[in-house]
Amino acid sequence: MANFNDAIVKTLAKEGGAKFTDVAGDKGGATKYGISQTAYPNVDIRNLTEQQARDIYKRDYWDRVCGDDIKSQIIAENIFDTAVNMGIRTASRLVQVVLNITPPDGIIGSASLAAINKQDEAVFLAHFTLAKIARYTNICMQDKTQSKFLLGWVNRALGGAV
Image (cartoon, rainbow, N blue to C red; front, side, top):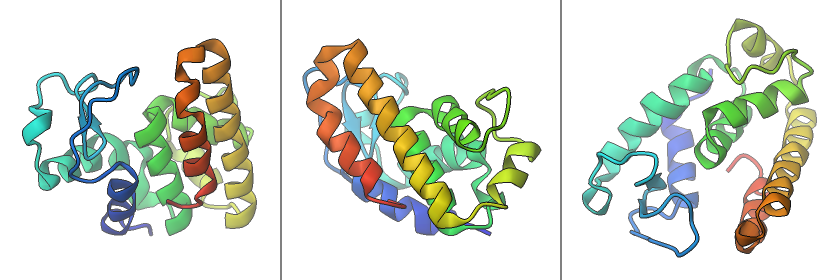
């Protein structure tokens, strides 16, 4: 089964680590370790520790995508990282769309887990990557102010497992 400690190291690196940022136009607002002020208004983002970020990611992201129950580490890392980047429901819905699970309710449950655990890694990752890129493109088509993030998002999607 997949291991959170292996996954979190990669996602924290992609999220910029301990660097505090507050990028104009970023709808998340102030961010550190990828934890945004918008998503966590009651957290002191500037003084957030790595352990606090890890705890948030484990509880609010990894556990919600059932990371511990996914057999493939690379698939679990990819789903987890996408949940961090796009949100749990969106990432979970994309997984379900890729796996033809209907309706795609955005909740990884037993049916989704069973389908995930039957997947060929390379095939799943190829389809999931294309779904992510399509999602990012759609965001930018709907809101041109987000276009400045597209290259970074696509680069992240193409980066594989994280």
